[in-house]
Length: 265
Ligand SMILES: NC(=O)c1ccc[n+]([C@@H]2O[C@H](COP(=O)([O-])OP(=O)(O)OC[C@H]3O[C@@H](n4cnc5c(N)ncnc54)[C@H](O)[C@@H]3O)[C@@H](O)[C@H]2O)c1
Figure 1 (cartoon, rainbow, N blue to C red):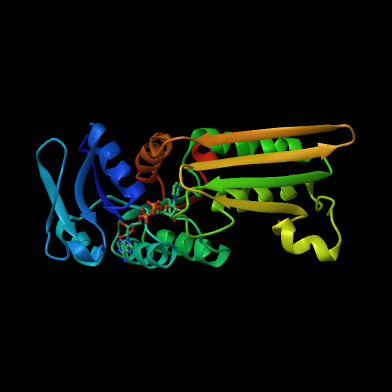
Figure 2 (cartoon, helix red, strand yellow):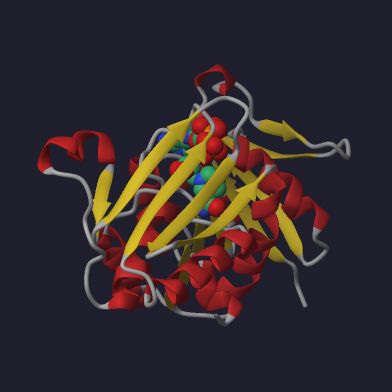
């Protein structure tokens, strides 16, 4: 079978660089182009690869799609860019794997509509780490048995959004599983220090250099607590999930939201 042709959008970023390396490691995937808006590279048209070869590099995604005609575009950029890039890709008949976080419900629905209309597919996953997906799954199960819950998410200091997409998704899954909000704690005056609230769950965001991506879900009941914690200690942790999504997205039409669906959870 012909290899799956992949373009990486945001290829010079922290995640983009990992995706480039991961795609190069897989014999059934072929890196055909890279896109990044980093200004200093405006006059560079090639990205040198560790194996001594190179691939096209551009800041113009639409132009790249015309030239190399990828099957799949993997996006790790910033929210507004990712939304616009997804529209461009889907309209041009390329499927998308989106790791960029911050997509709203309306944007997710629009991506689904566009993918179906153009007979291609999209995977949007706020977290591509297998362990993190299992953490969310376990938190969802535990949610039915506890009345109190808090989430602490910890990320590197350059992360722009807060709370993280994973924390928001965990809280939503937990309150849906419970079918009623968790018990709120603290008076009105304390709420400023109690973080964002989703379904009665307080979300706390820590940003520090030295961290990658970490999350702890804490559940409480009389005389006991349960902690479910996941740590991504390197960005490589996301790559098996990204590679799985690239393979799966070529077999489908429409949107898959979350890696859990691809893992059959
Ligand atoms: N889903 C997951 O598992 C997962 C894991 C880690 C990070 N993320 C998310 O991935 C995104 C990227 O994170 P990062 O740490 O790699 O950030 P980063 O800042 O290191 O990289 C972003 C890259 O996007 C590029 N960019 C900006 N505007 C662009 C445009 N118009 N066109 C093309 N490229 C453009 C930047 O130049 C940069 O190289 C964030 O939203 C982050 O939350 C998701």
